[in-house]
Image (tube, rainbow, N blue to C red; front, side, top):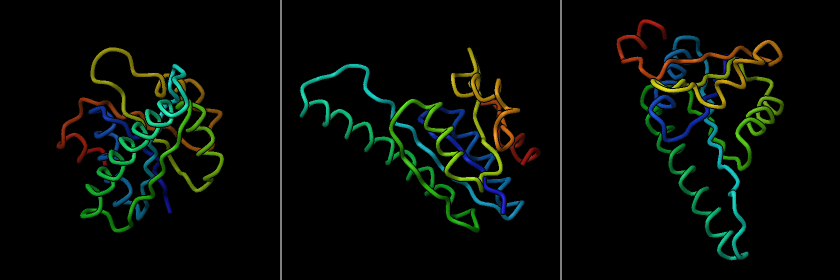
Length: 150
């Protein structure tokens, strides 16, 4: 079974990557894994305040990835796997790939304008060293284009 790992955040390009992966999974009899990364806070507040800030960030990430999974449920034959992890995005994705050898492809969305983003830049530059292919999906693709590709 093909497993497509999508890194979810609140950007439009993440949504495009998710729709691409969902179409590929449906056509190949595969499954989508959704990974939301909660970055560590850059500052250190008093213990209780810091814990509250981190918990709020985690709750937002969980709501985001749960909502994304819900949007797939009607179209997918297999329910998506959901994970929320805290840490540096690159490290978290590398760890997830190491823990999940069943992942067949890492699906990332590239911004429609500006730079591609840190995850796309990093993983595209080391694609030959990864245990799976990297799909970089342009964030500006519309539904018709996604249907042609998926």
